[in-house]
Length: 254
Ligand SMILES: Nc1ncnc2c1ncn2[C@@H]1O[C@H](COP(=O)(O)OP(=O)(O)OP(=O)(O)O)[C@@H](O)[C@H]1O
Image 1 (cartoon, helix red, strand yellow):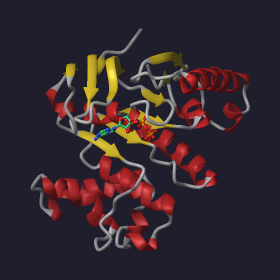
Image 2 (tube, rainbow, N blue to C red; image 1 turned 180 degrees about the vertical axis):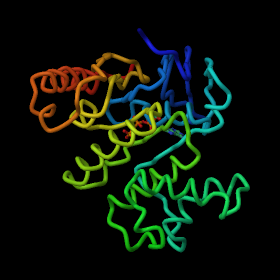
Image 3 (cartoon, rainbow, N blue to C red; image 1 turned 45 degrees about the vertical axis):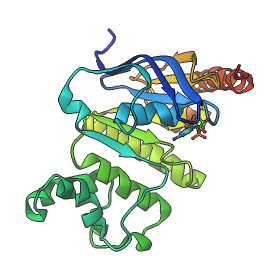
Image 4 (tube, rainbow, N blue to C red; image 1 turned 120 degrees about the vertical axis):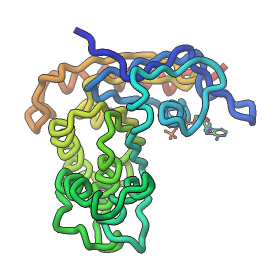
């Protein structure tokens, strides 16, 4: 059975003041509990789609419909750059969204500690960002996105700047986290392998104003581990996604 949509985009278009149309007639249902990956060539409109869902930009045409206003008002966003406050501790960086909501440090402490535990940073609560590795900084950014307990987390190429070993580790951490908190995730990546490993659904977008050219549904019940990476199923998903991505990359904008 298909889950209910958390948020739906109907006929959404985004044209910038420069006249460039990043998305046109874009339809998307983000379904409850899924890890949905938007995969596509640079400039196809993946970040624009995330920014529209996040409410950081408004569509030029079309409608974005939320099932619950609560979900709309409590979205977690993780960017490629962890954007941590360098002068603040890990604890205070994660506390920031609750502070902005007017919660005292004392009242927020249990939730900050919970978020830090989810990303295995409990022992680093007092550290400054400069004392953290790239992977730890990203885990801190993820904890900051989690601390408000959002039902929807948007992740825009969060692991792109990390080395491959760290990236694989964070992929596993994200899957474990997803198992713990059960949030719906919309993930943007350029990596076919990352998309195949993490997702329950992949949408391949083309350069032609974000047209969706391929949908790949992956059984959520499949264990995601080293065996999965070596499986025929994984190879099939990668092959399908690569083929669609190649065609999408070659597609010319009219
Ligand atoms: N604020 C803006 N003003 C004008 N053009 C923009 C703006 N934001 C994005 N664009 C353009 O819209 C198109 C889609 O951009 P977007 O960042 O959504 O693509 P993307 O698929 O996320 O790319 P990448 O993978 O390189 O991050 C690009 O051509 C980009 O240059």
